[in-house]
Length: 434
Image (cartoon, rainbow, N blue to C red; front, side, top):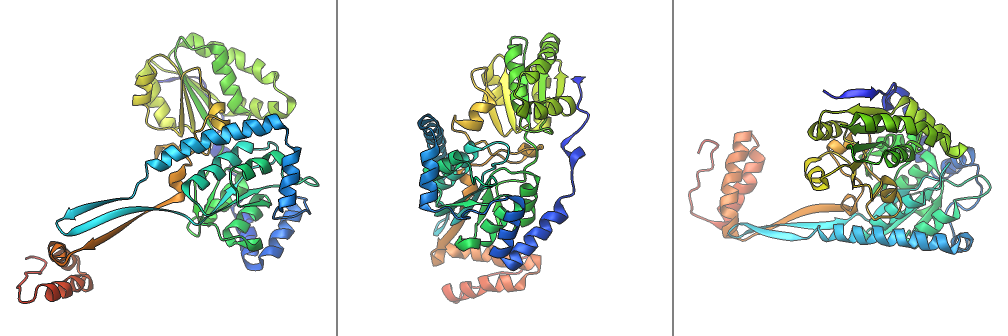
């Protein structure tokens, strides 16, 4: 039975604010009154009075403000994400199968027509989110991608976000944040095409808006606070483990980080190091990391690696790092995670920013049933079939009998009429008990 050397005093549900009514009201108002309502909320919450749809001149000015080295880094990250997304896209193929002689069924992949990519831009300028969402959508073949990001009062969207969205292929850049930005993409305000799917991380209001709108529009996932788990054995470097935990704790005051290990000495050393590493952070990062470590972090001691793996699968973390021997064993054994980072030589921040895998990932245990954002999220896998008359015969017979067994006589007769036309004079037994 795992031993908790440090136990969380709070969980993500402990801070569940009731934002549902607020978000629902804003969405309803914007749906009814359109552009004018969205602009009113933008003025109230964004404090911005510039262009809502960025012009070519706006984009050019932003690009000019981005340092060349940063442009190179953004292009490097975007290229990695693009190449990985292209490899994913290649796994989705149109196919067909002759199910029975004369009846062919097929699969066809079709990208959605329009996507809305939300890019956070509050305390942190999430350049990487623009890269992850826009690039992946365009590789999938989405015709129109709107990149939406909250502008800062009197400034607008951070130039680096604009550059990233532009270089990754965004067709429109929308300077609007929060619920109003999500609504604008969903309802097709300001001349935008209505989004078929909304993707990208955001605060609790953005997440709630996506949850409410799901069904009317597709979404990537319902996101909660970001979380990370590290599996480490006795040979792991305690300083690196502690640094990685702190690096993820700075995401937010309620971002859980977990260490699971089979070595007590390592666990104790990590717990000793973390407070000092947090103290050395800049003030803007320190508060989040302090609260996340104090209230949400856990350190769990297990008997062996199998118990470690089972514990990890039970948590189903968004980010999962393995700093332990025999990496292939862990790769084959672990089953529940958003993205896996194997070995000391890689870290969550690499995936978050530039290595190529997507950083929009399932949180709050959702990795038990879903993966993260990929080209697959933007694709519809549809099916088709065609048959010769002879090929339709056994299917029609089975369909008629199954339909009657179910009490669906209308269904049965759609098979009957074809059999009667294609095979006149043949006496078929199409009763349910035939």
